[in-house]
Length: 171
Image (cartoon, rainbow, N blue to C red; front, side, top):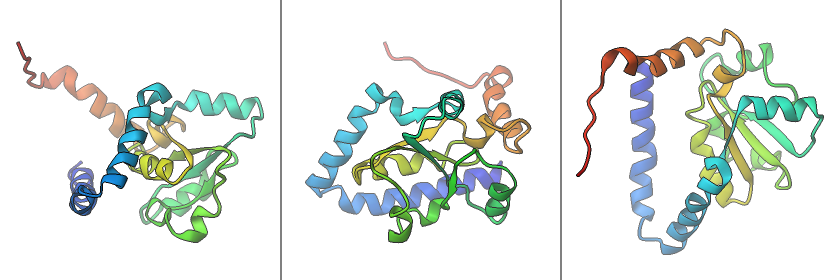
């Protein structure tokens, strides 16, 4: 769990520090604002595993699943088991021109990672580039029975039941 927290904290600094340099770029801020404001009417750019399952079952061809898992065993995990029809582009290599060229702009692009965290970070910039991008809720943990991170995710969901985390309200 510490490793996951350190990763997310590091990821925050990688995104937040460079982003602050662009905060005065009004054109960029306007583009980001437009994408973010359209989120609620588009399911916040997430689809569920059952949606993808139904599209596959109906043999729909208007979407592409992109497995973006990273880590030392990610490619092996992809080769061992991935969503049918998915292609593999590691999260940290998404914006290389040769990888962007693999993605159609006339289809939904569904990103999937281990548990739905890193995939979500790709959605807004990909939408700003003109892709109809979405993340799949809970990633592979929401798709594959007994996926290694599924137990971890369930632990996160169950923690408030026993921890009684503090909340405050505004009057």
